[in-house]
Length: 65
Image (tube, rainbow, N blue to C red; front, side):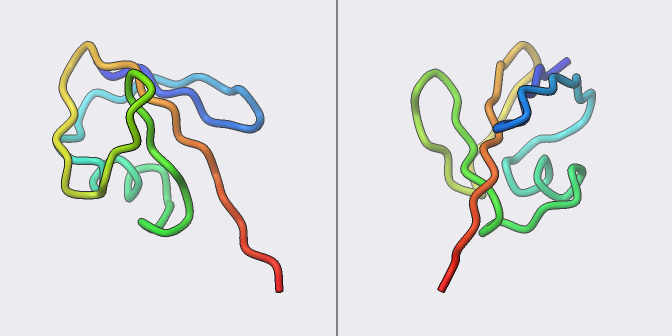
């Protein structure tokens, strides 16, 4: 089980299947440029592997111009 905290709302969910950050974002309906993914204070790139037992923060980003 992967624990995921969605920010800025602070909602927490658990994901059972996701082997990479990109797969996690797709499960959440997000593109790779729509959020920052953080594990243990480390920013993860879309190709990074995530594992059962990880606690992940997904922080939505927006661009205004």
